Length: 110
Image (cartoon, rainbow, N blue to C red; front, side, top):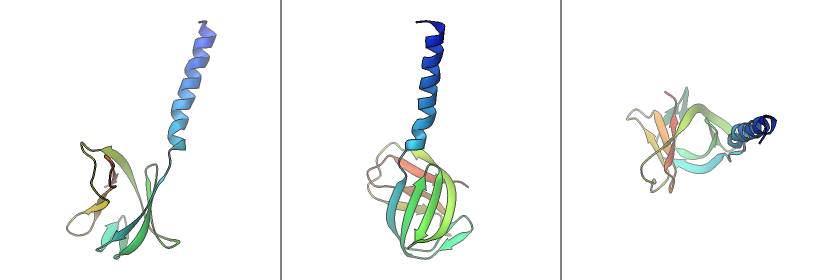
């Protein structure tokens, strides 16, 4: 394999590696929130909401209205989570989102 061919192959592989996360499918889930929670500067009352996670960006919607947004990151756990769950502190600050059947959880930025 010539040096030019090797360089072109490396560039192609690098470009594919960079573009693959761009094609990752966003997570969209309808979840009931059973108690008041705080996400960033927003306070969310109990009710039915749509959760959208696109990459590291969380959006919470009530109908078509965006009620909260936050940044976060995905983390792997040792075992799959049995059901959808919102983890929050005693005072209602949302810490993470868990999705049933998945080992990945979305942890909100502090």
